[in-house]
Image (cartoon, rainbow, N blue to C red; front, top):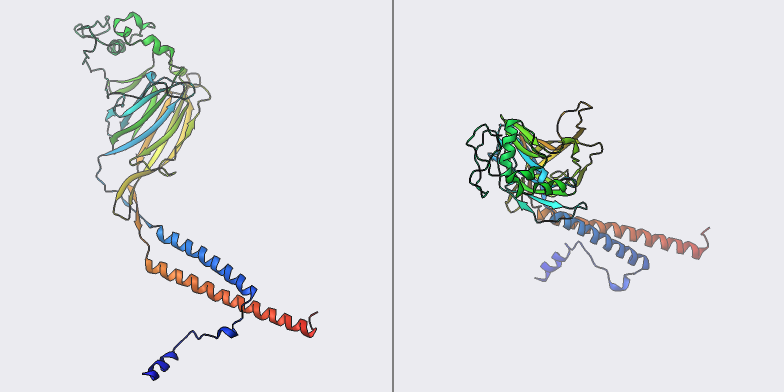
Length: 385
């Protein structure tokens, strides 16, 4: 039995020396401290890399069947009151959504950008020339249209109904609408006074068809005549509106705070020469993120091209002042998948770090020790010049 242990001891690849013949030096201590520091730093780097998931990227044709896409918007127009701003959206399928605000909030701001009223959420309304429905919110059962309506039996119970009748007749709306009974309760004259002395924050989200389309924020009340989209800015001229704005946030789908998902964050559009039309052409790339726990986040990355032009009759530039966004969807989809890193790979790297640093430190220590001994011996013999 003892012979077996004796034979086994011969396989010891790490023979030990006696404590009495071991020599400890200051140089060896310095090398040891430095090597331990390097080991610790490399181990920490490897640990962080191991805990960080490995992300693989795939590119393929988008076959998702989602019928709609969510647009998240936070926009500030500091020089136009909320009463004279409208958010509209339409898509390439021909479907128009006029005055989308059923999930969009408008907040009044002062000249310094501070809120002066609670956010207001309004129901969606679609106004068209053929829309003859009237609201019974006024105390009068059937209000007069003041001769503007083509139908003598039509009722105009609100100020907006009277405006609509005037638009159909192509009549100019009175400069003093307070003389119209339906407009008295709406305090239209007070709204005129604050038209350019207040700002407006428009924020929230809206759902649109998953096809290419556009949406815009522009002055005036929006409506359609014979399927033509029109903004009524009376009693002002469109050139009086300063469309300087700041885009706080714009994203499509799940809101992810990154440069590729929100490249227009804190973008300022400055109208330096009067009425300006700002255009943002957006290319959307559908993106899916698959986490390690299997959770899937559907979002959209996009790139944007900016363009602006001054709307002026004198310069011959047509259009209307406002902030316009045109977006197109890419047929390709990007998929990012998180995967855990291999523990075996991590353990192998740690062993390589410890063994490599220990070996190199031993070689350096041996070289220093023998160099110092050689120099000391030459000094003793007087051969060191």
